[in-house]
Length: 106
Image (cartoon, rainbow, N blue to C red; front, side, top):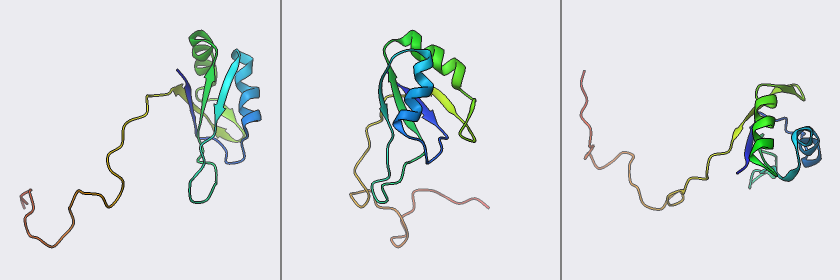
């Protein structure tokens, strides 16, 4: 399992996060996702620790804590959802054919 850490400064580094979380146990891995187009950090991270007890201690201590001028959001990471086809593949919508599947009530 891993921990989701949100509302992070765009200046944060893996070393910064490791330093904060190591106070609660052994940090196995830190991931800082970046935007594909710009390469800029996305403002959140995932932290993996050695045990669930360490993760729980870190979550309880750090959720809502102010760090680097922001209030962190820290909780258990949810499993990644499977995404459907990327943009442009299937799924009509929009205007033009007049076959709307909803009715308007005024």
